[in-house]
Length: 150
Image 1 (cartoon, rainbow, N blue to C red):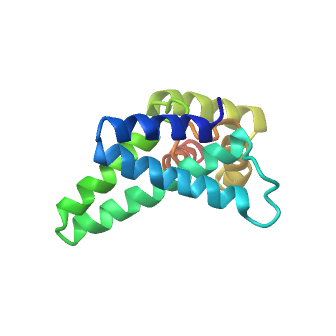
Image 2 (image 1 turned 60 degrees about the vertical axis):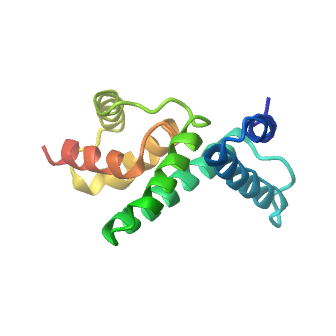
């Protein structure tokens, strides 16, 4: 079942159960899917990588919004954004823990023979390919930087 079909099915169920938070989050995802599918040059359906990228972007946007709302003392709006993050992450692959991520990144560093900070781009490129959607880019960058500086 594609992401679009899962979201539509879950949206119908959320509407039946009158779960407003879930309906709002799923409508947002559905809207982004439709926009991505109708973009010029998109060719219709999204690939699995495209779906993961779309969901990851949605999560990042909502986390950024929540952080801004919290800085402005608008915890009510931040809670809404964080609830949507929680719902959207259900559709992403399981996230790696920091320990698991460190092990994967250490292996990538060894495989590429990376020796210092000048190899950060090479390591991050390979890490993004291998761990797409399973880890936050900022966390990966922080770990890679510490691995390459030691």
